[in-house]
Amino acid sequence: MVQVARKRKQVCMQGARILLVEDDDVLRGVVERNLCARGHEVHLAIDVQSALAQLRSYEFDLVLLDINLPDQTGWDILRIAQTEGHFLLHQVKKDQLPEGTLPVVVLSAVRVSPRRLAEFHPLAYLPKPFPMEAVLRLAAEAVPQDRQ
Image (cartoon, helix red, strand yellow):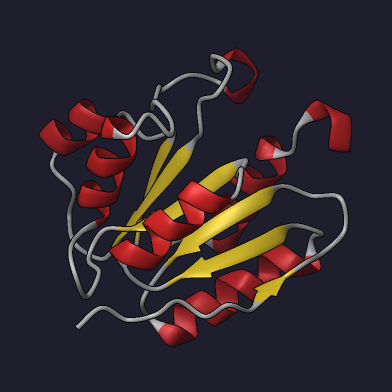
């Protein structure tokens, strides 16, 4: 059964537009509140289908992506999105990203293999539990120049 993403999103000030893909209610709430408190606009997805629907409907500055999701994996999101041409992933500084590239930060409670990281080149990999300051720093770096 595919879970439907909550339609609710926190619309905040002039920060980054962030898609948070996380199925754990508590962690999702904590990350969302912290990002919104810093002025970021946070959209939520709890599974692969809702994440892909969000990616197809909105433009984001950053994706925070859990790997273990109820219907498939975060890797499936990346593979499908790349196939559809939504974005490419490059491990470079935000100001050096080619036009149309969306930075992805991988969040995972299980160890991610170097092979997977090399395959998808996320901007960052944060093993859970991760320091909230690391997420906030990456979000701040994702804010486009015209919104700073």
